Length: 108
Image 1 (cartoon, one colour):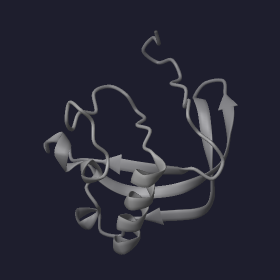
Image 2: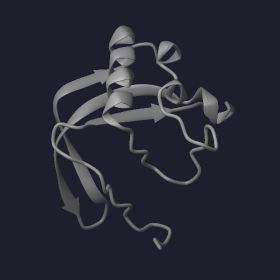
Image 3: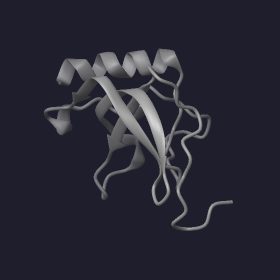
């Protein structure tokens, strides 16, 4: 179990996979989490204080209007419904990632 302040490992990364950045306003419910950016993973290094550091590849997108950014939970489904809890990472399958990328490209 990790202690508060310990680096959180990123377990399922691979070069060429996509990393999505998501956010929601503090006063909004979880089902309003939006996809605000994406980059392809070029590699990763380990930093002694931060844990893993992702290196972005050639694909870099961001939503130019975050209010129009695609809703994350429209693409990724969990049995218990929209719930982020304390984890920082969610791993999505390639089909979900492709659909999320296509939606983000429409608002970038």
